[in-house]
Length: 197
Image (tube, rainbow, N blue to C red; front, side, top):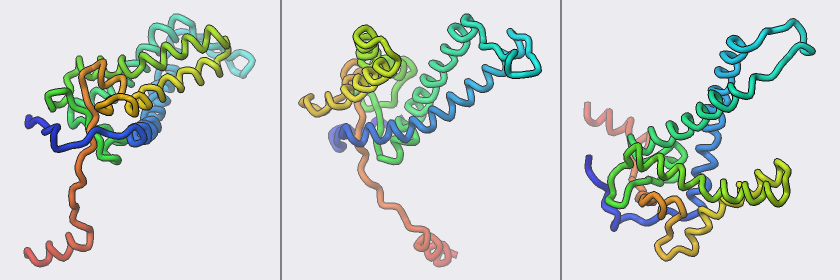
């Protein structure tokens, strides 16, 4: 595996990172919805008696939600980022904005580095969410505080001399802006194919 030469590339800007997360967020929400649906069906079949009308509807047991569903959601998130970062350093959202995450030596991340980076990215949102929950107590305040923690991770890039985000520093990784590669257009491709025949 050939390392990326970091000196020839620039560090990704905060705005591009956030936009890539929005792109990836749509995919992650779809995956989490799919996992949640499958686990809800399985949990309903295994743990609950079903009725014939909505008045008999029940919720899944708390133990099932806490020990089966929550870890499954976390594994889905870790698996999503881990697979993409391990295989090419880019999620689909990162590919769109030509971003690539590598370790400090320029190589693709290992599973351990991927997991450490995900935990590091969750640290500030978790701390801010806890503080918001203690201050406000409502779910809206908790979510808003966690969102501010997430944004802090990327606003930190503006004040860091190297342009690194919080998760970059904690996990010894870096997100780079890849150079633009000239692509052959569709029409040019057809013309060149005819010439080569």
